[in-house]
Image (cartoon, rainbow, N blue to C red):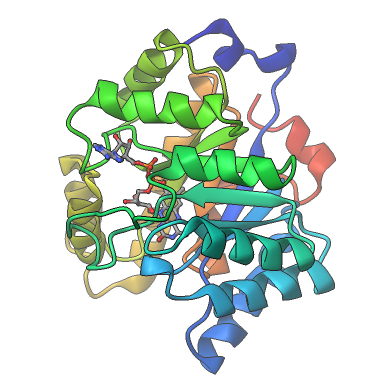
Length: 302
Ligand code: FAD
């Protein structure tokens, strides 16, 4: 970890961003907008809206992003993937986002069309990976581009150096920051960050924070993503299967403790996977003692 990671510009500040996914039903849409209204009060640095697996949900992502831009003042990033599409098709999607007012992207290769874990084959006329996609977006305009990073390496990556090499290519092509896959072992993240800096990658690497709504479900998902679930989480959630309120309290404690520990290690920005639900996110931010206005937040967790 470099001095810049510990003391960015000599001051302490906690930055947050929220990730949402586009709703799949009217009910989920109502849930999402209630969540956005509640979480907007935390003044995030930006919010982002995911893009469906296999590029399947352009329309819902576009609809959600359009509404965020039209009805809120939240800086909004559209996730965009290049899986299963030609370069022209991806550019066309990007141009639709841009026409909607998007100036921030989260640029991803995307999961294989057969689903997470299936073999990935780049489209013959497409961008081969996220590094090429970043370069393609930068050719269109000088957008703020976030990319992914994998503290426990991407499951398809042969080893950590190959993974960090891909991150370096994305940074060299113009990515402004990396948002990480979720992780629960901060030592793993700190070691990863040291390797990233040693490889000459200087962009901020922002921890992705997953809030544990359901540990059993998360374990299934995590095994597909190559993220590990430390044993201490089993202990923390033991015996709470039938106690949703107690589970939520533990989930908020766990995430707040993880963030507090990362802050002690000099990390200042966090990307929160909201799962389109506000109460747990707000419970975590309240535990951190954050104010709902940016000024109060600037002094928090110092
Ligand atoms: P890349 O950065 O291109 O590559 C990922 C890793 O795979 C690299 O580190 C590299 O080591 C390895 N790799 C790539 N190509 C090769 C190759 N040819 N040979 C060997 N190794 C290779 N998915 C969605 O579909 N929609 C989303 O909205 C979305 N949002 C995400 C947000 C975040 C913050 C994160 C962390 C992931 C998100 N994903 C999303 C998941 C992502 O699309 C998958 O993890 C996908 O499998 C890889 O995409 P990437 O951009 O990380 O790929």
